[in-house]
Length: 220
Image (cartoon, rainbow, N blue to C red; front, side, top):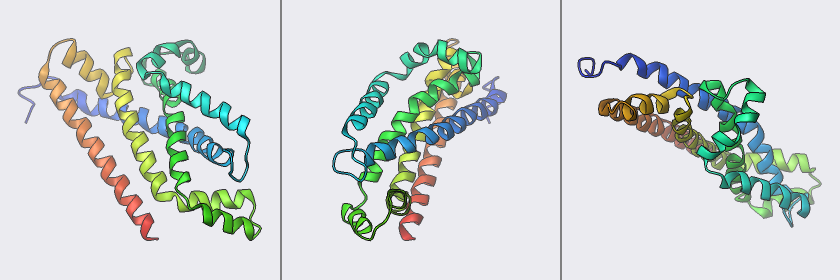
């Protein structure tokens, strides 16, 4: 119904696809990095199954430093590294590298919080039965924390959607770039409104899906 009002209607679907592409690859790669980091943060902390205080403190400090840097600054600070990895710092490909660097420590902290919710008594019981560290990690910690892990990843995905919108400032594509080029630079308010509505619908859909998956896991 906006065809007569908005001459850019044909740009929304490609922009949405670019956003989903960036979020998809970033959450995939960020999860591959973030989950192992989250597990390490838990098992190496003082009093846990693989206590390594020095290692824990180093990893925790590095994660805190990266998380302290605003994403918009991270975008520009990583330009040399991004060009080295993908050959460019603009466009969809150029945004994925800083997005992965941004979300990986975020996921690690979320994973850490989720895994720390696992009952310590349960872990001690498995240790008493002679379970190995690997068995405790996969059969106890990760299994028991599945609902919290799903909700944590949902939060991370939504955070990535916000970050892709900021990445649009450097020409990363996606809905953020569409809103910036047309909604802000050209003062086309309707473009901005439609973009915001699409983002709200996307976030609501993902949050609802994450909640349902987590709820079904709690019933298992």
